[in-house]
Length: 316
Image (cartoon, rainbow, N blue to C red):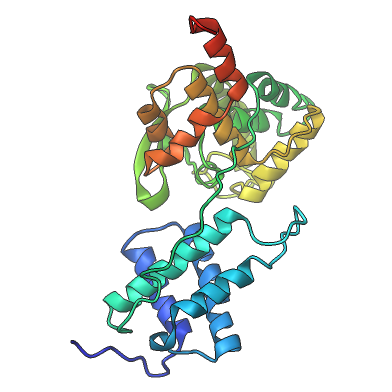
């Protein structure tokens, strides 16, 4: 067997950083994903140091990881008030740890993988909150015509629903992403994968109006000429800006659901599936690498399914 490699100070932190660099450049994961993995691994490494005084991956055993998993279940979620982290967070933490140990073994930083026989926690996939078409129209209508950013806000909300873009993709949009003749967007999504998404006629009209009439005013305030959506200072919008814009108009529309920018993406996918869209086409527009991620939208609206069953099934 080849000799296991050593780092001078033999610290798990350094191994983790090497692993994250590997993920960034070899697997081309997004910045947000890398940050999530680092958060998971930092918590895991600190636990190993503080509780077991472990700083060497060769000393980690499956019992240490199981005890760490038990710890995760005791961390409170402030928003919900329940005990334990969400099942999705727990699942991601296990994925981060499993990938880290697999990397350590492949790079000869250790001679064993303690996660090899570790069972992953089951993930209870909760159905996402969605908005109806009427509610989305109400949000757009709730944008005050007196607002200086009326055209921008209408175009932003409409485009997010019409295309199902992630909020990170929306804030990164540039004018060059738009093909006005074909009425489509060219998006560089997760993993630098390009996809084409139709804009739709109604969204096209609002977007064109914003770009022609309002965006030039905002663009004069800075040098952010290439970005599509600009804030009041002429700078590119941030994810928090998009969140605040949406929250403001949702409140004005009198909608009491817990809505985030991602809700528009969920609504986009759900309405396509309900309208009979091909699952593969929806997967392509959403930019999902795995169709199983898209399939959750086929189980969303039980009342809709019951209605279809009642209308078309001979024994209903």
